[in-house]
Image (cartoon, rainbow, N blue to C red; front, top):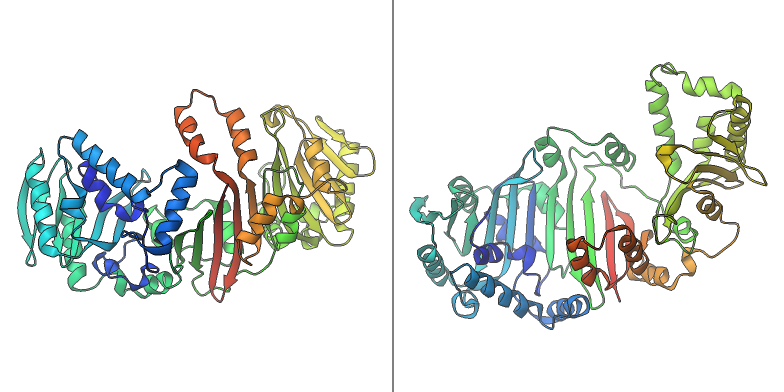
Length: 515
């Protein structure tokens, strides 16, 4: 949907006017009562500046961009854009007198090019007559003509450069992508709407109190619209987490604080039991010089399912279906026993340049099965004299693989009691074995990241300055987009991801900690 610049900014206020606001999540709002039933994506946000939410948002704008008052800054930019377009507007005179507290945007269909069609914006009004006067003024000032239309007793205008429809429905300004979508909003206002659907009501009720904006997504509907296609790896991860993607819904809430921004997620697991587990001890035990790390609990179950799938399918031209596990057992390689011994998994990345970049997957194990399996693989490789494969010397059971596809470092597999590490480069692999050196749990930024999650177990961490240094070394200085983004990215001290469960909901928090 494209409208003249100022009207776009107003209509999409739930997304861009995160200048401030008050109140709680979208569940108590009437905006969704105008959204057509069945829309897969709906965003709602707060418009009017007030209270702690305003002060928190302004504090973030000051820290990140040096802006004292984000609301005033946005209005100034929008008025400037409208003047440049030859259609000036005065926010204080023409809009502020009738602008309500809430606004929303809905997206009806995901197209093949991953863009959305059927887009509509709904902005709450405190004075329907004044809002209509604003619409009339904008239509009159437009360089491209509009034509008057009416539906179910609601008058509106259709036209402009993109054929959009604009009008007042009840106490809301509506800007829609065409006449058809506008009529659907009118129908929703008089009957069945997104707000009347049980799936939406249940999902949005989990939105965080005091949020600045909430995003509702019907995951199953988006999958259907994309032709039912979902990446096999992604589907496996969802299945292992107990999530049926064809029926799942999710809501994300943006909650600003004085020195951080939280994005809080909640996903309905469609009647499945929410996953449990805490991998924070694995994450905290990863190397202290890692600029990023991620950990998951119960990884052995996922590994077992992956091995079963591979065994069932076989390897074309090499191993017939059903023969992988059976064929390796006589050689002392018990894949099933290895998977059963695996508990948690963690992955980390280190380095500040392309040449120093490294990382590893770390698996915590129980018993001696892991060391025995890796030792058996070493014996097999040693006897077979496979090209490009070297057996590690010293106290660790393991081997390394070199190839042109891997770059200038080998892929290394090593094991000790209680741990298997698959690393890119020998130094990263040895760090992953964690026999010496500091850990992430000793990093002050990591400790602050843990604290920011307020009791939710941490599952992911990134050090802002270290990650930015690496990106700076990899991305050419001629990349204007990155150079512009750096001004804001410099304010990020850390990213923290926490995961948990609540009855049949999987929950997560992403915290952006600011310097």
